[in-house]
Amino acid sequence: MTRTSLPQTVSTMLRFGTFILSLFSLPFARPDEAAEVVLADIESSPSSLSCTAPSVRREWRMLSLDERADFIRAANCLARLPHTPDLQPTVFPFDIPPVNESGSYYDDFVYIHMDLNTKIHYTGHFFPWHRWYINTYETILRDKCGFQGVLPYWNWSMDATDFENSGFWKDPDPVSGLGGWGDPRDDYAVKDGGLAGFPLSYPSPHVLRRNFTFMPFMNAPWPWSTNPYFHGNDSFTIEEVGKMINGFTGDFVGLQTELARFQGSHNSLHFIVGGDLGGTCPWDAPPTCVPGPTFSVNDPIFFLHHAMVDKIWYDWQNRDPANFWQFSGGTVSVLEDWPEFQRYPTGAPPMMSLGSAIMADGMFPESTVRDVMNTTGGYLCYTYQ
Image (tube, rainbow, N blue to C red; front, side, top):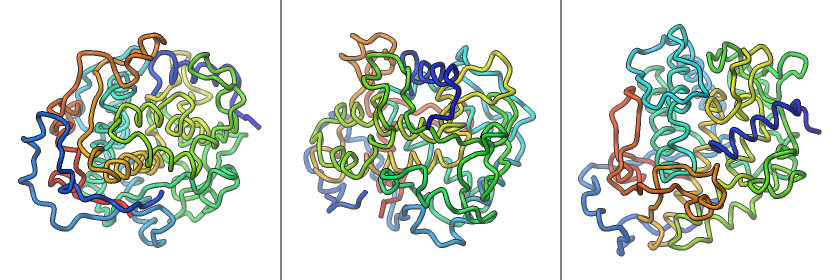
């Protein structure tokens, strides 16, 4: 049963959609076995950096209770550190509020995603930028809050059969649990687990919310949504994930288009969880609140979700040497123009290259797409289990 109010559902879909829409271990070819480099500017890859002992990202349920507790503790720590003046927005989109200087460092990290939203979805930035972003989150958890572990991922294909009642949502432990669905009597605020009462500043001050929405594409705009009765979990089954990893050989654009399509796994996971991850406005938000993907980072499970997105890209890269250095995309999202979107599903010109900068809004040094193509290339140093 869909619990989100209809007007906000439609509005949120429009924001994710027609204007700014936001496994499994396989036998891997090693990055150094990718003998045929597809792109001309790869020779300046930062391979001189050393990655001799990569960390291993594991699925959330593979972590010990102590490891889970450490991740949750560090997230709560970051949400209680003060705002940093290092945050310097660059895009200033009309649909987000100004920086709240009384907010937390976690809020500042959310704001980067808010500010850059139109640049990092449905462009060539999607995969590399989010890879940089979640790696940076892991780093700041470690540097600012003493996180001892490795960023986990959430293999949502394990939960696709019965998403609402999955055991993933059944851990109310106040120290090591992620908590479950929110209270419908209180704006779907999460009341259990270690993230209960997680304080947030955007789009207006509130606490973390989750609202299961089984058919999240009701009344979504056509042709972006072809089936309003589509069950969100049908897009992230084991079979669908396998199709992405095992298909699209040498076709970066095809992989991103499939994963990031309007009713694809990336969006469906956001929408089916709803609440903050789904970009719905709090009940008491001002009328100026615009729902959408901007503040979806509010829920720390965003990072587990996007680590799974990154794992799919990683698994695809390492499945075939023809995939490893494949990259293509433009800098301009044209999703609001359906015919143009058919031509440029990963962004219209100006086109990107491996030398294109990964934007960081002043909070962190900028890197390049090239720097994040290889997760064991030096700048990054991790694999997936």
